[in-house]
Image 1: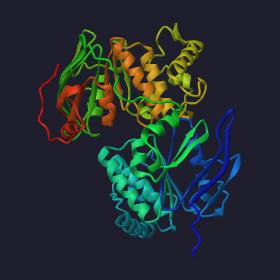
Image 2: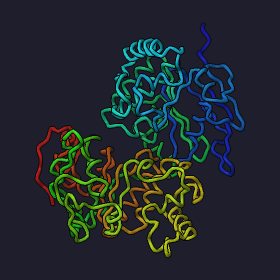
Image 3: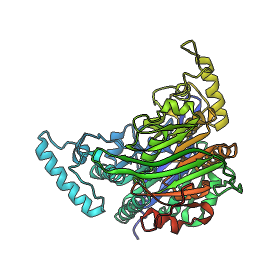
Image 4: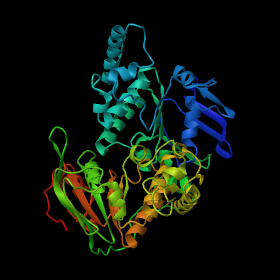
Length: 515
């Protein structure tokens, strides 16, 4: 009888400390070959640190690693790649101006003659794409590729270097539902072909749909290790946060008041003259959360930028705070803040934070000239730090260290810091793009509660989310966008996933229900 195949990954007694923070404590992880293994936990639970130890970004303080049954010391990413381990990061490691082909070639040139190197690599990639279904346009600059194609390119980069063990960190955080389905189809194909996949995600339904087993981490330790068939979404959520979690609708019945923001016939065309926002009218009322649903790329992002003053339309009108804005004299972000409009951008790294700033500086961005923070032209750093401490306490930002670099916080804690900053100013209108992208389930619950509190205090909240479940859980009224236009609008009580899905796909009829 053949001896059983050793696990693809066996980590034993892994310890990793960063100063006073014990990121991993006595962690064991076993992943059989040719399986998909989920790793979940709250932001800061230690899961990304554990995978960074496996990939050689960090050296464990103690513990052992074996790959395919062979003990291995992984001191660098080079060692991990040589052992057949590849990692796809949540924030892509790509050069936008390079072609897809040259991004794969970068750092892995087989010889010095680049034309020959490109030809050889192209042949390997063509064969790999045919084998796995990872279709990528190799000659297109990365900047021109949609997000789903960039994701596939990152996976190809790992596989072409010989990865048999693939680590994916929040792979669906920026994907549309259709792109997520395509990715899962590819991952299932890779599993059948013998690739071992470790999936870090906050989306528990994805764990149930794709994984064979799951490990739950909390406060640096493993608290649950089980086959997916033996658990449930509720059990995983409770294991992650140590208590029951409620992500459903609250019992509050919205009592909309006066319109605090009104947009009429907004139209914005890109440089090619294509209308990305096409004759959109909407109103946001006091005491109401409005959700905008739609497949990413259908005008939601551009609409948020128009309403927040980051972009001016070619046509349309905006009424805010008793003032009217038209093309040529459009709202700007500073004026928006003065009129009690706050904005949590979709991309927190590019638009909401300066990653090298300490948290206390990021926490006052845009508000640093306010009297509380500035006197006679001089910044009041102590007041800014004190305010940041209060924000961190109120929004459970971890660790509560205002001096820590913004980039060293987990994605969920970065998001809570941005939301705390924008809510601190007590806005009448809050625009939120992708409020829980890349955020763990406990932080999702906290962020949803904060958005409802703003609504219940008489504010108007607009939420753009690619997660239909989130829109249905939060919104009092739902607007669906397709191809830059409003495809439908209705109270959430009259919404269901099937109807909204048809509208998102452009299969419904437009309803003139603008308030």
